[in-house]
Length: 542
Image (cartoon, rainbow, N blue to C red; front, side):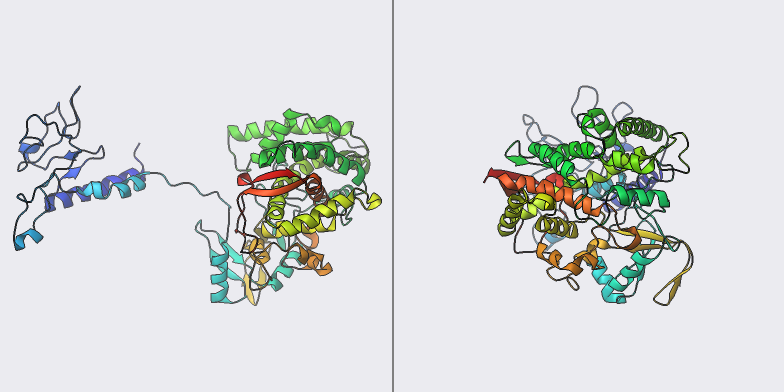
């Protein structure tokens, strides 16, 4: 079956051949051999098509009527059809006509399709598909947009045809976070990962963001179990003991990469959420990995397969919840929910679903951990100060788990490399922004990564400066949103900071960190993106 691309490519080839016939240049087929000129004398025999070899023979090429076959002057010399003909000075025309004469016979001249080969190959190759819904606004484009339109929200159209209202002024960010869900509804990415709680999607299968419309029971459970707003979780003792035990996997060798970080953090997450028996459950770990990899846009059999994985993970987590201890998040959630009928959860909250979503939410901890340690490796003074705090924290007693300096380092890492760089919400009704009315269904884009690293508004925007978070007002700065603001703020932000800072402290107590890959400039601006899969750290004993 012919495609539109194939028809267009054939039309282009036909035009090129017509041009070749008018100019006298031979045309090379897509297999690399020239096709003969039109005419009865040049037509190939039925058994020997031009550009194709007979069985057992070498590739054939039509040399043209005026050009002897290659190697005719030297019968003993075999010449490949791909070898260009060499001309001596005697063969070249002399005088003024030399400038207008072709540099060689038609067979030796560059053919039209050879010149356009790269173009034809690119035209015939399918283009990579862009992921639907993926919006990434570059800082340069946003700065140019603000230079043209000022600070007012700008209505732009993406390459995929989506229309977005882009917020460029911090004053609009304040309204973005303050508007209720009835005005600005969450339109989260299909896989919204972060140090936050998640909401199930429309089919209760895919994770969403905490900005979704949560039932009051769910909001109360999340705030109670995750201890929203408390720097140190009430179950900090057991949680930090788990972190200390699992952190040994991080320092087992002299190098640290993402695979090892994920192994240690995911084991700790299962123990913190479900209890110690879940630590070695590799089958559950595999199911959760599959759920993290799903993008929510699968169709047909792949959707059914994802549903099957989801059901198996839910059943396994529910079994752990039934036997969870009081010092686990699942146990605290079960006490908060009370007796729940798992067959009818319309009026209640299933602790198993909450536990599964908390496990998925911790997927961002390994990435943030590696980036923070890499930044500390590039700044020896900050690393020494953080290591001193980690050493002193052992004897802190009840204050164990605070680690203000290391928490500031984690926040600064999230400012430079946020887990969710762009937030999108949709207006539910006609909405006015700066005197301009926009219809219902308008997508509003808040480029969080751009505002957090805006050199026109943020001092030392591209430099690692953890000290900025020592200011009490830094957490209320509307430009800085590692955990969002307003009603959509993550209730587990303090718990996530405590766990990530504790992992950093366990590594720094006995080891010095050096960034092997990539090498960061401690003085110059840091790169815009930092893929944790390419990070490799070297650990040496202190």
